[in-house]
Image (cartoon, rainbow, N blue to C red):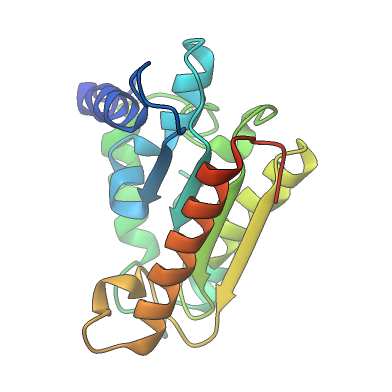
Length: 193
């Protein structure tokens, strides 16, 4: 079974991101790979499975969705991404999974039924090892009729947004995420873009 901390994070993400009944506009869920590594990746699935109202959208930054680290970019981008390496991912997955199946849909959403989820913005750097994770997530979500905006940012590494103070691309990516969230929450519908 997964480590207990993953369920705690799911609960916190789910509770913090869902709008109270008195709020007219739907909320959005922001998920980056650090949250994903602790179980936040399952937030949208957990919210759906609990029968709770889904947020208006999800914004995924450099998503880690493959517990086996089998994407080609794990190797092909290893020299260009100084932040995420296959050995570290495999080690984190081992601790997170705690003996569970690495292809469990709640551990690896690329093996889940994503039908009915809110529209997703997926941002990933072209130079990062998790590039294939993001592409596979977009493919699985799109095949399940989830509206997806996959943005592959040239020359960017894992969660380049954190370097916004020095990096114009970080500021532009954050602005794009904000625009997406505003557009999705102002529409009042989750039907697409």
